[in-house]
Image 1 (cartoon, helix red, strand yellow):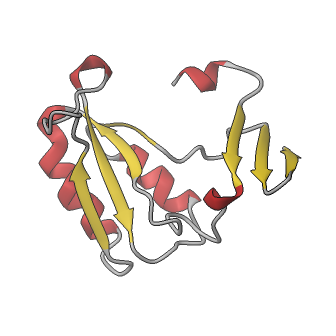
Image 2 (cartoon, helix red, strand yellow):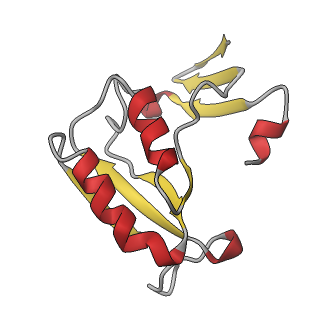
Length: 126
């Protein structure tokens, strides 16, 4: 995680990405997993969020083949159907799964978030 090595971590988004809870945008949350643990983690992730409803797919490249990330890992695009307001607990649990390298939740990491809206930009600081 390169961003963990820096004192400042800036995220830039447009206002369409603002949601009231985890995964409320219906966009997939990326979860990087070691290849040999992909099915194991599919099952564990679906069990963790079964009440919210989930869909999970391996990220595919432009040729329709499994996308291979750095160090030959796979990315699971994880879709939670019902927004979750308490993101910290599941984020830490996902990170603790064997074979999970990282996930797309930046828990308590950003120091600045820049939000572009229609005709305006707002800045939020930690």
